[in-house]
Length: 75
Image (cartoon, rainbow, N blue to C red; front, side, top):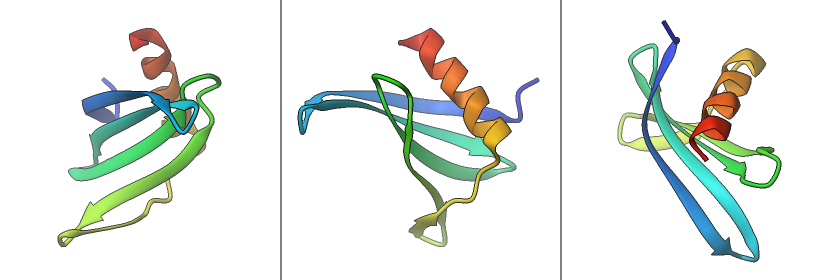
């Protein structure tokens, strides 16, 4: 079983001449969002949503790599 669950994924085509994948997921009962460059899946940003606001998230490399692999399969 995966340590996270992707709840939504949006591919932004032709945004600022780059394409991005925005992924929302739950992990340890918390809501997160990450944005990856579609071309090489480079991490652009990661956020955690708490108390009605978003703050930068500190995610493990293992978790990010697992999400990258799932995004790659879905694209």
